[in-house]
Amino acid sequence: MTVQRASARLLSEIRTSHTVYSYVDVISPTQERVRLPATGGAVNCDRTAAVRRTCKAVCIDPLGTLVPSGTSSLLTPYGTELRPYRGVRYAATPEHPEGEIDVLPLGVFRLAKVTIHDTTGGSPDIQLEAYDLSRTVARDKFTSPYVIPVGTNVIDAIKAILQRTFPDLQYDAISTTRTTTAPRLYDVSNDPWSAVTDLATSLGCDIYFDVEGGVVIAPPADIDALPSPDFTYIEGQRCTMIDLSRVFTDEPGFNGIVLTGESPGDQLPPVRAVAWDEEPTSATYHLGPYGEVPQFITDQLIKTTEEAQATADQLLRNLLGFSAQLSITGVVNPSFEAGQVVAVTRARSHVTGVYAVDAFTVPLDAKSTQALTLRQKSTAGGT
Image (cartoon, rainbow, N blue to C red; front, side, top):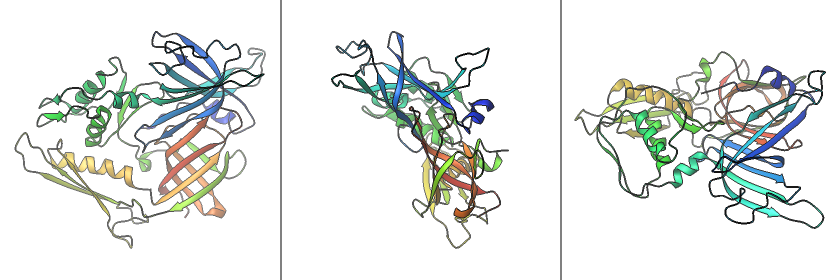
């Protein structure tokens, strides 16, 4: 799923010299909120990681009022949330003599670690380490056997598991008629986040917490079906790319999905579907020199050949492109979400294509650059 969160004005502003504006809101379990200026750190997002978003922030406390004095203090890892923001301060105008502020949320994180550095003659530096809410779900292990009853809608099953930890979540989820065909049992100490990830995967979907703390359950973006990229790095004026590097690898190298659906509760025979890289111009085209490198998956929620094929097709989109990876360093764009699409052109490196964003950083300070990890899914008239 791709969402354009930034205004056209902000996306234009970051292509020129601009004033960075960032801060971190610290929110206690009782909803006490304190805003801290961020002097360093970054938010990291990686769609392939167990915890999609992590945050490390360096803040200052000039008055020393926020330095923890005990476990009940605000800046302690016992339920406190961090919400970092980054954006720009526009030039002053008569309507906004101090400059209008335009910031974007970078995620909702549960504070995990606090380190205080207090040096003689200066204000204490507070280093904060936090993780998105999926880690909190994962740590809330099942303490008794947990059963998803037969006939439960898969999306409803996911919501019920997450509700154990967070009762009031907002969802941006696909609709499905797919249900469990047999009771699904999770043992004591099993990981609930792993459970919902497996359920989402059976639908061909990613599941993650978005930058507002809501849960997204949606298939990965189909790059070839998108009308235009979310952002561009085209060499020339106003290009924010500083450097790039390319990696070609055959690991993991899968170019196909062989999916078997086993539906043990309704005595239906197993079903099977196969999805291959069918693009003749692709380096991993399954009928080309690369050959066939399938990944085998078995799923107990899939009952029909149609469901199997749809899921295999969706999962294949997650696999393709890892053989041609691109790393970019550039001026910070705080609007990115993993799975978004960028177009990149750099003639002397023979780069002209459309890429999916797999991982990126958003520094909280004004001087650091942004790192992106991309994978190529299609070309745009070049090599």
